[in-house]
Image 1: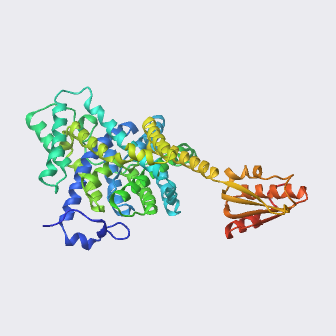
Image 2 (image 1 turned 90 degrees about the vertical axis):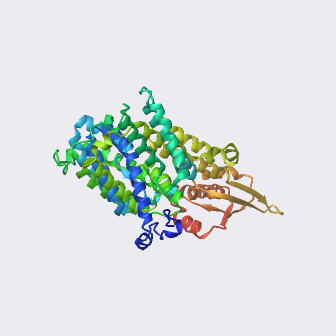
Length: 502
């Protein structure tokens, strides 16, 4: 019996499935194609909604999403991750579009793409390693909450027929895997519920009600504004925001997929690939995008996708829907898609992280960081802001813990002729400010030894504090010996000592 799942061992060092492995098992192609199909169905209503927020034609946003998905299938650094026109980017560009006109969107997207390419080429994507685990967990849990809450609107102020269809969708998603797992249950549920509403003539809100989804494929987006310094100054703030919001969400999603699939990805390649994809999407559709976290979870967890084929199929299917099957796409009930996304939301949350037994064992500071990250994301509806606040808070709490771990022990020799200070812990700006408080300048013997065997000097603030201590002892007629410095600390001390204080 052919396999339709890919194990981590089959992936190479770059997290890709070699072509020969696919050719040996064509059933894998079917798995990737079905994953791409269910992902597109989950993608379409969100892209339409985001297009309306951004003030652009929904068809343009759908085409741009197809361009993004197809381009990243070839250029991206993370297999199976879905890239499309995203809500976070729509929120950033909306003020510019509404104030200045949609013509300014194309140069903004191009400039944002250039910034992302520079970010990737220069290797700055590696800064993502500094995102702590507590922030990542908060990011994932907040994502689940946002996805779930976003679907509630499809269940409020709607015809009563929506609720039986909602229950039917959930029932199919729950029962169908007991029959077979070769076809994603959400895809079966969406098709079945759509067919039922059309056959019986049930009137419920559909994808077509969200916005205009017909009219064929748009051509290349022309420049509608002058390419002048004034235009550059006008679009620059928005372009920078688009670039970094897109990068943050994309790289965090890549890390999430790395963990879900136990396979690595190239964050550098993902960064410059996203820049190229956004430039192309700007010319064909006009809208920028980034990783779609919810749809990526659909692709990887529900569709069991592991290769670039799934996102390639998703892009092709999306073009097919817009160009040929727009009438079919328009009649899909919103409630079926909402039910699927609610299931995704529940599966996205890291329930293990909020178990009381786990929370009790976690350091209080990490729990605080996770809660603050979740709360910030939910309040602002912006994952990038939440991650930024969580990362800054985590850094501050870490510095506080490191400063508290610092200590100095005073040891007087038996004959009282000398005194030794044993320094423990990292000496940096947060701890060095209190270093002098541990010394008794006026009562100590004339020979003073400061031992750094159990400590490290990390910055100029520490060298300046140590210089000030030595100067105070010299004023008292004492001699100071500094010993035990490791190679790096000794080099830092030698290069700056005597040059920092006036």
